[in-house]
Image (cartoon, rainbow, N blue to C red):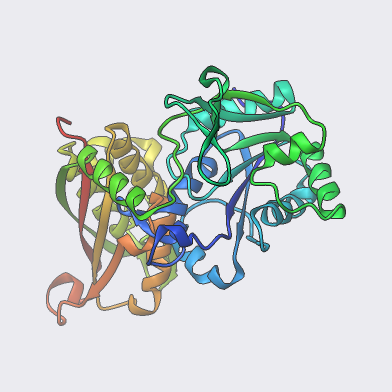
Length: 393
């Protein structure tokens, strides 16, 4: 059941990630086939209890950001500041007009946050007003002086490693950030420390050891190897669909409404591109075809939008613990011309599937005036899908 309070999330992504080595800001690098920021944001974008996701980015990275998170739900990005603290403050101010009750603040460099951790964060903020995810320390910690000599050995049972998302009552943490800005305090390394300075009691809730922050090149190497090992069963599938022309003034092609002198004769909206993609994904899963899941004899699919079919196929992959690595569709027709619409179609497929647009290809060809497509009696489409599944699936 949805929670009664309005919860928003801030994704802090304005840093440069210099300790992660060469390759540009670490949040825009790929990890296991998806950008780090896409992985970090998608759990919030798709969580049923979060009504708004507010990214905070470096304005110089606008193009990188837009490409990296295509297909996700979020508010227009706020411009980040010189410090993490300033960036969070900018995100809070950008959300103020939306009047959330609770805000979750998460680092884009933590790409493995789960829906369960987000739900625990929302619950903890509702109970306490300020809370952070934390995990127990398993190693002995030493406190050292300026020369590196041990000064003390803190009691391990009382130590915790703080993670994000850190969760707060929105008005309280916004007030704390405003006070810190007025007092010239800009040295807080996380929002819990700022909240403590402001006099708040900060509770902890159960974190997740997998919710690690990517900091060094070694972090990327380790996590890439872990993800590859988990999803080592690579499968491919192909799909084909065709629909004849009938009366109408538009066609649905790859999820895009395209004005045309004819329409499709079809039980659903006749989107041959999406239908071929659905069959390709189901083929990779060895899970039947589109007709077995959405039979044309069933009246509930009369006139149905084909994005529902594609989302269904994507969910079938996720339900088996897998992910889609690449989708490709080729449209076969004389008209309409697909070239000018190619990137719009790619973006729409990326939006439906949750893929980065760089993993979606749309191509087109004619049949040199031969056959039914050459006579402009209809349109055909072929598609291929590459998916990765856990071993044993």
